[in-house]
Amino acid sequence: MTDPRRVTHAAPTGAPVAAALPDRPHVVVIGAGIAGLAAATGLAERGVRVDVLEREPYLGGRVGGWTESLEDGTPVAMNRGFHAFFRQYYNLRNLLRRIGPALRMLSPVLDYPLVDAHGRRDTFRGLPRTPPLNALAFALRSPTFRLRDLARLNARAAAPLAAVAVPGIYHELDHLDADTFLRDINFPEPARHLAFEVFSRSFFSKPADLSAAELATMFHIYFLGSSEGLVFDVANANFDAALWNPLRSYLDSLGVRMHTGVSATEVRSGARFVVRSDGGDRIEADGVVLATDVAGLQRIVDASPSLGDADWRSRIAAMRTAAPFVVQRLWLDRPVNADRAAFLGTGGRPPLDNVSVLQRYEREALAWSRRTGGSVVELHSYAVTDGPSDVRERMPVRMRELYPETAGANILGERVLCRQDCPRFAPGDFARRPTVATPQAGLVLAGDGIRVDLPVALMERAATTGWSAANLLLERFGLTGHDLHTVPTQGRFAPLRRLAERQLT
Image (cartoon, rainbow, N blue to C red):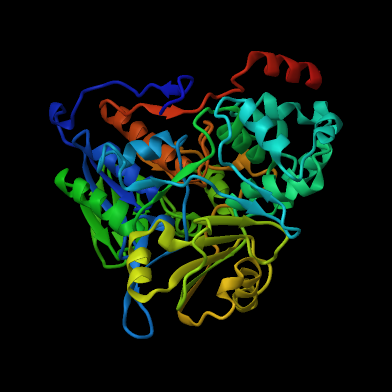
């Protein structure tokens, strides 16, 4: 939180703790991903009784971690791939500060190089942190962007990038796809593929399938709207060990009851809510937080006819997921070269989008590497259109092109995950996306697919909606909420905003 222009969104005020109320309220949180855990934390810290239902045996949702065994019986850490904890993720970081105020569970990654099919490489290392110098420096030192390209940009079409205001940018650009928007700007094609597709792939979407408003908002969050920089931190151990087991201990100390391996099947409304689970349990509550993925939310709402109204239920039913993605983790019998970056983004090398060298940052992979002399490498393919088996065969071939030292390596272990459970952010989705508030008092939503009219994305959107869900219920109970923090909600430089406004008139 080094940016002096970050914005604080004040929480609702009320009694400091539930002990001051005539009756202590009780809330059921369904889903223990980032959103659900933030909601549970926000409620429990104010003395609300909380039960959390999570269908998986571990916490963290799509950022969860667990243990598997290799073919020889060796236990190894496993997750769904790396996640970047950017310095702009104020609300997520505030959640993690509950288990470590200094955030020592996170380690900085000094660079995230990008390389295309021609070997051209971009880097985020050493960029100035002051906007707009950061974006200008990145563009001008890129091998795919030349000074003459800057002069060829369509200033009128590019104006929204400098004048982002949330949620106004969605009303302006959500009808348009990101690929068309970048072509209208006349952004050079090589730079489009190498730089802007990084943002698109963050949503597991190709630019033609991503809302231009989401792309512009991302550009604002990471470049023109923040001086926190684009270099990020990563968890220095598997997610369960570094993050969620310690947070579970913290929530246990607040009296939160955690039910893992349990799925909610129905929520009934009446004088109080009644939540039913697949284990036959029946929990009564004064409030419910639905913090599941898209399919889970739709399943619960479909089985709960008393919830919401017809329009709200149709919005839930209309939600869609992004394209599938594949994560292939390989345990190799030899190391990659010592100068290999922890993360390498690729362009023009389908189906490979990212190579991660886990022993560069994850404690468990480092221990395995030191013990065996090998390496743990993870390959990612986002927005998959081919079959998972085809992707599984082709990604190691691409890895060997980039890292020739792996050509003769034997694979001692392999795990392949194919999932399609990330929310879609396609053109036109914004207006009908459900919000944290619902038509039903006491029922709130949270998750990275839920609309919140703040400049947040990805894990930070999950955390922000979780805190927001807690705040809505705390306000209903007459309790004090939790302040939220974001990058500025509009372009931070008045001259650029005025220039953009002139281009748009």
